[in-house]
Image (tube, rainbow, N blue to C red; front, top):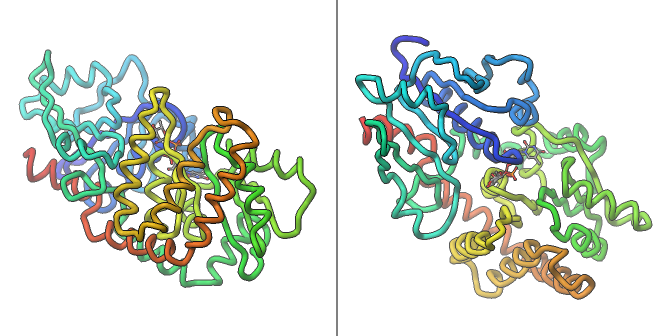
Length: 386
Ligand code: TRH
């Protein structure tokens, strides 16, 4: 490790899916690139990062990408220095040997637990709170992403909105993008919809509703759950000229951003794609990560309350109806009875399209007036904790 630059170790353990690594990777890259820190990203599984960044070779336990030193966590853990700032993502503990060594350092590392994103109000009260270790002379601080100034903000690379603007203004770049992912460009005036969801989302109902849309529709799904559901629907129904189902390979993370920028409506999920859809400044539908105790409905309502606060009532109702219909599990609903409700919600949403497009742009611009999460976190570590 170099001598002058502050050293950061970011730890992430894969719980499931892509979100944990997606967020950790973005943070690591930004802290290295935009804040000049010497960053190691420690992962217990390299296969997810290799999906997001195909340059990653899972055969190597240490490799460098975009200025980040990517390391595999192995047990027993080989200590190789302790950083000045230690970030654990989503409450994943760093290896025990590492924590013990942190406690032995004269100047203790600043230790952060980067939490999950939620729009709920209690987040403001918990953000930046200390949590003293019960056994060791160490204090960990909670850092909560969020939508308000009293939270840690959202990840947003410094050049992101400029790149998005350029792409959305550049027809040629969009045509080249479509050719590269789908082998063709959508016809003039086509409604382009991207799909990324959890199991049991009413993908078939969406496809059916889109088939009624006046004009061509492209439904585009990177391989995964939504793509499989879309493909099943396509196979079970006669080809219709108006609707084109496009299943594409899982995209590298930066290309997925371009898909969101290129589409008119984006169905996203979890945490990271949910945030990226907001930066895309286009209408979107969020499939919240389902939890057995139903806590996801609270999260959904909390975000909807913030997102629709600036909307006229009828427009807010259209967003709420569609989002709720999308999040209702198809297996928990009375089959056929669900379908008219979903398609009504879709038609209602699309009838407000212009206003919802303007709102998506305003929402994105308003969020961008505050500092991004990486900048907030660096400031907190360097100026508040130090
Ligand atoms: O994969 P997810 O379901 O991740 C989830 C959430 O983070 C959830 O909150 C958490 O509890 C759970 O993981 C463990 O959805 P998310 O957060 O949208 O992450 C998907 C990532 O995959 C995101 O970084 C975008 C990226 N992606 C691509 O790079 N290419 C693609 O083609 C697609 C569809 C996604």
